[in-house]
Amino acid sequence: MPLVRISHTAGKPPTFAAALSAGVHRALMEAFNVPADDFFQIVTEHAHTTGVVGPKTFLGIDHSVDIVVVQITCAEGRSTQQKKALYSRIAELLSADAGVRREDVIVSLVETKRENWSFGNGIAQFAPAESTG
Amino acid sequence: MPLVRISHTAGKPPTFAAALSAGVHRALMEAFNVPADDFFQIVTEHAHTTGVVGPKTFLGIDHSVDIVVVQITCAEGRSTQQKKALYSRIAELLSADAGVRREDVIVSLVETKRENWSFGNGIAQFAPAESTG
Amino acid sequence: MPLVRISHTAGKPPTFAAALSAGVHRALMEAFNVPADDFFQIVTEHAHTTGVVGPKTFLGIDHSVDIVVVQITCAEGRSTQQKKALYSRIAELLSADAGVRREDVIVSLVETKRENWSFGNGIAQFAPAESTG
Image (tube, rainbow over all chains, first blue to last red; front, side, top):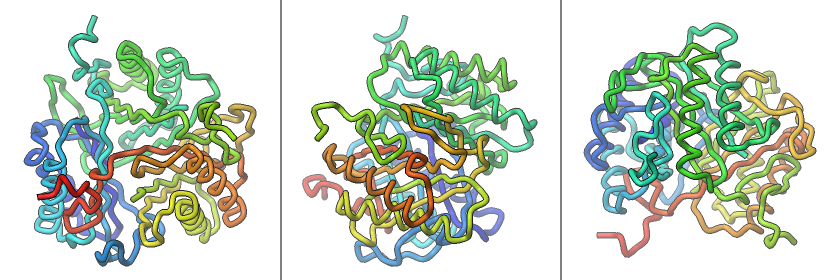
């Protein structure tokens, strides 16, 4: 049940956004065991520097003006190891498939309760069973 | 104190965004007892498929390319029953008032502490009283 | 490790967005001890009323149609006093440097674990040491 927000800079080839989408989703499938059809994202394009803002360097990592910011709201409960695997795989796939520098891949996770989601029809599909009725 | 982000696809009639806004807000008033004037939203339009990304089917629910994603940051403390009532009411109202298929209404809640908000003038209007001073 | 989303209305001078960016970041440095180069933001412009939605009045505070919404995802652990200092400083700086009415500055904080971030190269730079390996 992730909801993914991907923010990238303008001036990219037409296939760029789709490559970002697919790469982040594949990483979620592999590292977080997200089902293939649990695929909800908002992808937005922004101006360099004034729309997507990043530092030239942080923590010794050099950033270009083309950072990609991936914010993922998901269910709580993944281990730190799973999170590390996710970050690593997102950076790998966005580099390989979309040509993003690995240094430019920024990821932020926001964890919520399983009852905090509805995937259509106004139903809380993942609410705990004891809360039903 | 919700902050609502509504993401919808392009090509809708001029009244569409306002109907989404009003529907989500009315559902929050009814299910979460949000005051009428506690009405803060960011509503954005995106390209089909590459901007708002969704699966054809998830959990047995068929989605069109016109899903509407509603992410609500709000104070923690609502019960699962209230959350279920919220999802149900949002789907009902977006269907009735904006013509959105009930299957296409996706909702994500992010809960935060009451002290995590300022609604103007630089003041934490909902911080616990014992923290004042 | 904040990720800041700033949403403002259209029709502003060219320097407006940069003044918002700088003001929020300076407030984070002063109130939350954020390093100068920990500067990641998404700044977006929206239509009045239908894009950025706000009430005329809430909690006795009058809003114009030019509210600025600042949502900050950051590491958990700041005190209520630090949060109050942040709200106050953001309102001061956006007023002084960008001409935003103090009444129109809305702030929402979302707190996450330190392991929930990657700032490049696919590494969880702030994960607790005991989780490494």
